[in-house]
Length: 305
Ligand SMILES: NCc1[nH]cc(CCC(=O)O)c1CC(=O)O
Image (cartoon, rainbow, N blue to C red; front, side):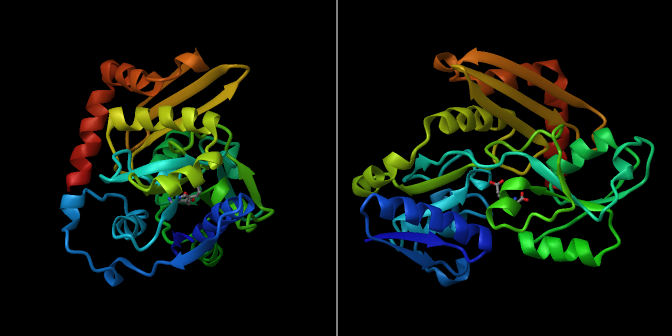
């Protein structure tokens, strides 16, 4: 029996059920194990020694390390670039919707006029920075919680719109008709991809997960996360990256924005898939050498306050 741990948000359940269905189709016996909260899990080893990071992923990672579950399913964009010791990303599933969406309330006139005023909700500093760069006069508001809570909050507030990952809304079938894709906004590294992690030494589960691995998605998200790792590491950051593969080539774009959106760096790469490894790292070094290092220092200082 393969035990898949899942948190109880609708998106987490959807993702865990996808992995369950795929494993079941391959003849495995699978059960879902609800993981309540960090407080419920007793562990002898202190967290800082395990090296678990990642606000959305650590509860499941701890359950994996404690042997309470065999598989943890995560939104790959929530997974720190530095994995806890003893765990592996055994399968990176084929990517779903990648882009960010604007959920609005019927009117989007404020999008066409750069001098317009509007109230836009998002707690992501990546989305804030890119938005302010394009619409410097708009007012941004914090909006936290799971997808359903955020949609409810948007409806109850006097805001014009809020920004969501397309994957989060479309997978659980709650994308409102009043929404549009932000084709100009570069997504978070690994947005729209799902990863199934397990213990490094659990060869039976690694073998079971191997057929779920999607090579092109893995190549692209590895470079996106490499870009993030070289620039800053695992914190939430105004760092975006997106890569896709077409006709044997990988097209990569990565950007870094200052928190207020006034300065931004963009770099693009086009490489043969066979030479993709290191593209994200290389792109990050270019941005650092062109003045991005000063922006990164500002972000670090702001996060220490
Ligand atoms: N930050 C939380 C989070 N982690 C993954 C998703 C959506 C699914 C995905 O991008 O894979 C979301 C919600 C959002 O950003 O709106």
